[in-house]
Image 1: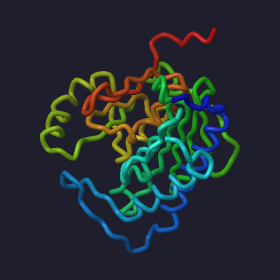
Image 2 (image 1 turned 135 degrees about the vertical axis):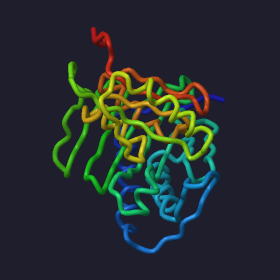
Image 3 (image 1 turned 180 degrees about the vertical axis):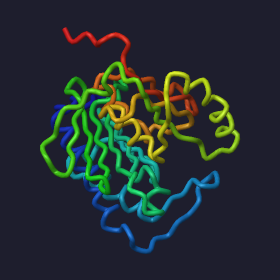
Image 4 (image 1 turned 135 degrees about the horizontal axis):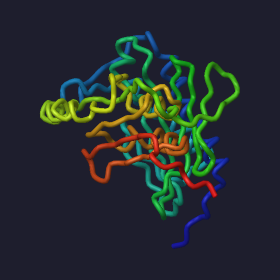
Length: 261
């Protein structure tokens, strides 16, 4: 069975931004409205009917342009795509607890990778309460738009900061969380403080933007980091993606400048 050729990255990126924006619009539309909340798995791991509605919006936006692609997301079953050259990874609402409690640190995250090589091709993260959109394509740099203004290119934290901030998070599993606490002293040796937003995607994007200096967290799922990791990578950061479920994801400033020649 032959596969369709890969689409142009510019087209894929526009689909990712459109889909992430559609999901974020659903979050905004239902913010402050009554919604159902359930626990999935560990205590504290919450899902609402808004998560599901937002994922439907994202999937519909993708299917309108690319109906035969593979799609995997946090809340709905994977969609098949036997001849697909592209697979999408969706987190319709990263930061569900923040959303429920009226905190602004939540977003919709959409990324796409090649089914043949596994390389991440495009990613978009839209944080509607913050008015921020981050996006990137492979080899095309990382970009940020705030408040609807024209996008600006972002390139990570500046070198030589005397005070450095680490972004991190903690697992819903008590056992994993205790291990994460135990690792904190070693992690913090080169940082003066840490920030915990409750959204891994936003914390990674803040490293790409340069407001945080690094990110490190274990026990994440692909949809948590897929889009943001590409954005940070295209911002010039060194990225370690989890090799297996539960392994750590990190984003740090490169010790050697990337070779662009």
